[in-house]
Amino acid sequence: MSIGSFIKKQFIDILQWTEDTDGVLAWRHPMEDMEIQYGGSLTVRESQMAVFVNEGKIADVFGPGMYKLTTQTLPVLTYLKNWDKLFESPFKSDVYFFSTRLQIGRKWGTPQAITIRDADFGMVRLRAFGLYSYKVSDPARFYSEISGTRAEYTRDEVEEQLRNLLIATMTNALGASSLPFLDMAANQALMSQTIRERLAPEFERYGVALDNFAVTNVSLPEELQKAIDTRISMGMMGDMAKYTQYQVASSIPLAAQNEGGVAGLGASLAAGAVMGQAMAGGLAGAGAAGAPGVPAPAVPPTAAAAAAAPEDPAARLQKLKELLDKSLITQAEFDSAKAEILKKLVG
Image (tube, rainbow, N blue to C red; front, top):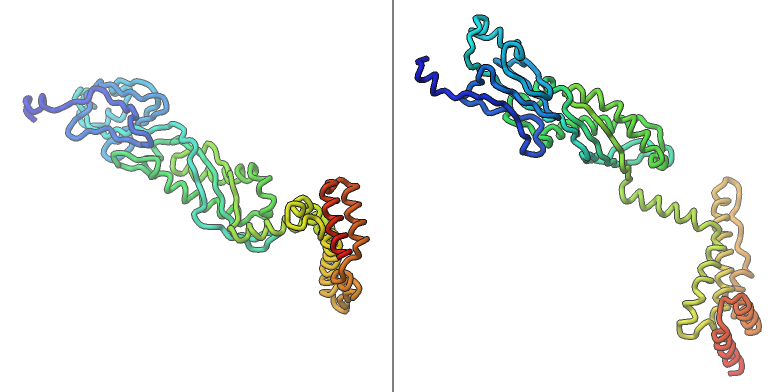
């Protein structure tokens, strides 16, 4: 090389990375035809690390700080051409910077439902979602296993690989768990801790440290969720006869606003009570009929007759009086219903 061409070459005096692009985890300092000046400055900021790669091999790793690039701070240079003669000439190496900042609030979720055995529902299909955080902890391993010689390597690219590990571990954990679905909500913290312990070694293989992992939601398919809602409603309903009486009592204020007022409510109350008793008896009979050798009980004919026969006007007036005494209807509503009954009675 002539002296003129040597002078024309470009030299790098300062190597640094300002992380002006969000989401980049690994960045290669642009070299092209430039060489690093002997005695040049390397600045590694907090939450960064730098890796020197010479002839395809990792030479040195630098943590936060400012360094003068000499044989004392970069021992590998002593093995390069002319360095054994202390010939202080520029040198060529690839320099990679790595962001070691904590990547927080990263979302994960199962793209497909996971089928597991459940103590309450048999076979169920679950979906799970949550958050996790991580950081690059070993840049040399991260470079060797993931980022390689690319000019930059982004957070989105590495998370594709991390999500595959996460979903595989999540599937194994849920599949091996004997915890019923109905108990999972109360044990999400324990589930998160268990999965984190399994994931941490997998992340470390790639030079990544898993800082936090949380399961925020475990859900069932919509059709199974509807079935659970129906089951919960039936449990809340309780005794069918009492539920029927509650419905009739709740309809009294609405009946007063409709045509005819509460005049026909007495008969509705009697019919509702009979219907509730009949439904309760029918449910009990259905359960008994399912047992071998136990016949289903017959419905007394007097119950159906009582429901179909018109109620005596005096009995209706008596029921209305009881409703008035219990403040379930107003005096005006009582008077109106009474007049209606008497009008029909006398024609």
